[in-house]
Length: 216
Image (cartoon, rainbow, N blue to C red; front, side, top):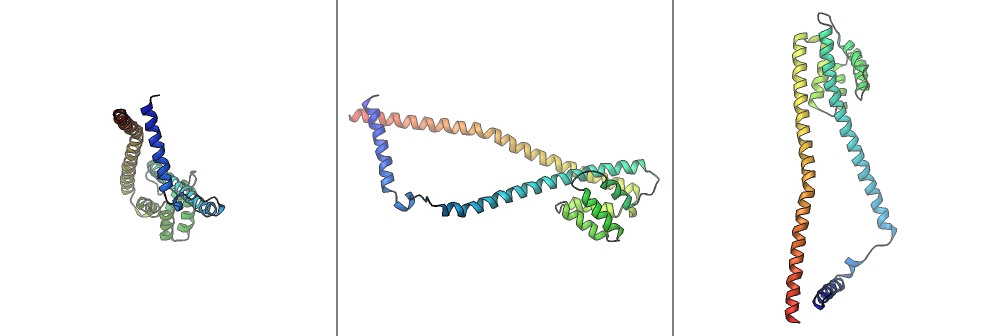
């Protein structure tokens, strides 16, 4: 190793030691006690608990939205198979409650409220359990008012709701694809930045070496 390179390393080490010496004592002080860790631990646990709770809520809402879409398809088939027959709203809810999923207990609660002649509460329950989604309220209102709507209008309403759900799903999928593409592109950008910084560091040290070689 040449003398100029050693001088560069020595000057760099000297600058680091000088910076640590100049730094205020309060900033260099390290808390070794358990008090700070004890205070931070509940906050971290609370953040983790909140993150897990929000993640479960999002997963449940997505599952509810998917089951609403599947329920509409089921109702369209039910309406086609029972053409010319009168199907009451409680029978529809009974059929839906036989399907497994996160909305099964909600259908059962709606069925109980509807038989007690409390349709508004049935709609409110479903709207709340579906995450306050306007589409959930529209779907619940369709179930409760099944007896009052003409079968032809029922089919048109369900087709329109399915189209709306499909467009929303496509939009969500596009956003997820954009996020994935950004994550894939991020390492490439990081590599470019690292190479650029490496080039700057090498150029700087070469320049410093040339200056020191001229001086010495």
